Length: 154
View 1: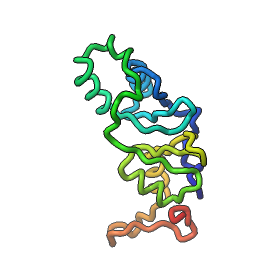
View 2 (view 1 turned 135 degrees about the vertical axis):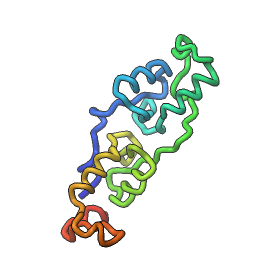
View 3 (view 1 turned 45 degrees about the horizontal axis):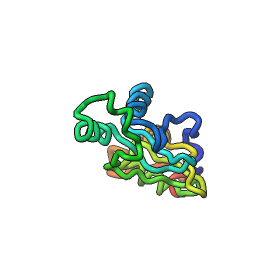
């Protein structure tokens, strides 16, 4: 199994570009109910992830909570406090799961670094839940998965 099985394609992902304004970013995050959002360069490469916290600190420190001024602040000028690591489409499942432990989504890029989609942590958790062997879960600290399912090892 590869990463594409879990990936939400770029066309179905809300994202912002570095030249977008703070205000439009807030509106997009609110509309899509995102707590963090991928940031792309103008040529479509993954540049990072903005979180609600990043935006709130920027508003507090720069704008004194005046949203009219938010139109003048570009995404590229907002410091991103949390580094979201991307994976490429050939990465292992282990690499994907490792990143999903600390990220609520994992950006997926092509060989040139262009953003092509993302994998939501929820999709990985749902997959693991559906394939878990809960029969023996209470008898040991280790949850087992079917032997024929090698998708989690790469």
